[in-house]
Image 1 (cartoon, one colour):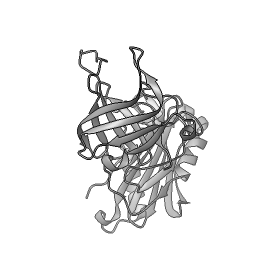
Image 2 (cartoon, helix red, strand yellow; image 1 turned 120 degrees about the horizontal axis):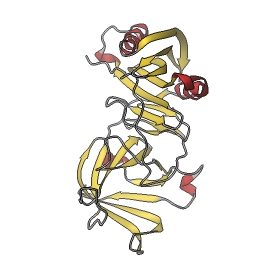
Image 3 (tube, rainbow, N blue to C red; image 1 turned 90 degrees about the horizontal axis):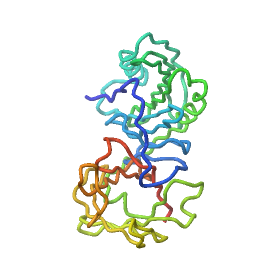
Image 4 (cartoon, rainbow, N blue to C red; image 1 turned 90 degrees about the vertical axis):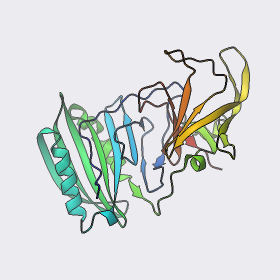
Length: 292
C-alpha cells in the first residue's frame, strides 16, 4: 500500500517562456484522463510532487494547486474520514505552529468530500493550505491548494474555485505520449488561440523516431530564413515526455552543446517544452489541444 502524501511548504519554480507566450486557460485533464480541474489562465505547470496527477501554480500571486490520486482497491477498509485525517496528519507533521479549521463536509463534482483549512510555518514563511479529500467509486483524491499566509485573503476565492471545479472521470486512459502528442496545438496565449491562425500540427512517424511540427504561419530562424516545418529526432521517451532534438541545431547551451528539447505531457489536453539544460521542472508556457 502506498498513499500519496503532500510535501508541505513547497512553493513552485518559475515558468520559463523561451518557447511560447502568455497563457489562457480552461479545464485541464490529467494525462490519464482520470481527473480534471479548471484553472485561471495565469496558472502554469510546475514540478511540485512526482506523484501528482496535476500540479500548477501562479508564481506571481504565490498560489498553487496539486491533485494526488490513491486507488481505493489498494487501501483495504479505508473510508473518506480515515483518508482525510491521515493525509492531514501527514501534512501537519511538516508545518510548525499549525492552526487547523475543519473538517467541512462538502460535495464536489457529485462526490462526497472533506475539507480542512490549515495555516502553519514552513521554513521561514507561513503557509495557508486548503486540503480537500474527494471520495469517488475508485479513488480517494487529495486536491491541495495553498498560498503564503499574508496572501490568503487575496487568493482564497481563486483557490476555492479551483478546488470546487474538480471532477473525476473513468475509466482511466493509458499515458502514451505517442498517442497524446499527435494533433493540432496552439500556444495558450489568447482567449481563442486555436482560431487565431497560429497553430502547430504535430506528426510522429510510424517508427516513433522522428517528429515534425507543421506551422500554420512561417517562422523565422536566427539567420533570417523562414520555414513552415520543423523536424525533430526522438531519442528517448517516458510516459510523460518525448526527448527530442532538432538536426543541425545551431543554438548552444552554456556548456557549448547543441540545445535539446523535452516535450512534456502536463495534461491530456496540455503540453509544454522543457529545454534539457534548464533546471528540472522548468517549463515553457503551455500549448493547448485544438479540436479536430
